[in-house]
Image (cartoon, rainbow, N blue to C red; front, side, top):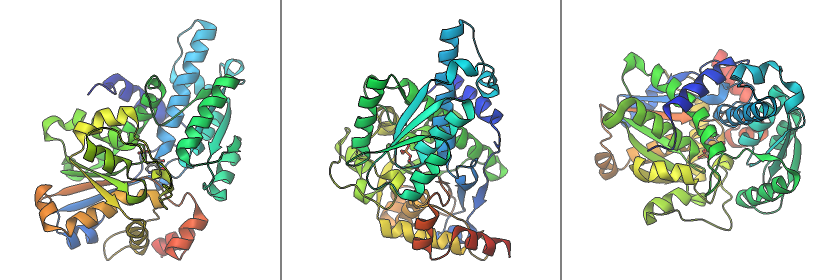
Length: 383
Ligand SMILES: Cc1ncc(COP(=O)(O)O)c(C=O)c1O
């Protein structure tokens, strides 16, 4: 699997650690859930504290923007530059007229806009019809020009490609396709930072036995899978993908043994996972790296959000957004099925790692689903 490189991962880790506000996000033990489903441990990597963005995407798009700007500076000055040079504004005049752009369900676009603001270039972010106004406002708050397009996410991907070509902008996409892989690979190198942090944080340095990973285009799951392989080799954890049943492109593709595009209505409540087409790079990893794929209903994800907000006797209260919980919801579903448990070797010795990839990135939607605002949930955590 040579989709990502060791050097790429190391360089991402170094660059990200320089950014203002960087700190590893917490790994939380969900003791109540572990007891209930009869495993040794369930560990939840809580990305709600990632920078000001409240989601893991702050690691990927921004790293790809940094790498892109470094290459522009190198081309214009003929000098090699380091990650700190982009951050310090030392070459501001060479980047200020550059425009980075992308299509987004919300989180990736926020992260690209955030990066453009941090590194001093421009951004144009394309959102489709059902992206919430709350998310639109957040993207604008980072100084981006926002364009709303007709159709679904995959239509906005095509629209941004056309516009970038015409305007001479650079697409920073989290999804890859034939002929467009360098930037998405940088995005994925950024995500490996999250995986590495989580593996470092596992109690007593014992690796997870299972990973349950939610999938949109699959870049996040593939990055975690690559990193698990790099760290644990043949001892790598059993890897289960969690795909929304309304946008089940991974489910269908794994079943068919080739990428299968889902067209039409893919409007799951899990906005970040509402993708109809797998990323080429992610496919190259997960066609071998995924051991199983589970389809998750919106209702199960909503139940999980409420459950995490309620906490437990010795489990913290957690604010988890809609796309954060599909991995956990898949784990809960699988754990109820004796046959699947056996197939996946899920038992009393299992240590399961899930990635809570976002907090309440759309506070109004969160409150509608959970019945309390994120602040009220957290106030419960403090009392
Ligand atoms: C919060 C959240 N979790 C998970 C994902 C899925 O990531 P990927 O599209 O790389 O599969 C996304 C994608 O937007 C997301 O926003």
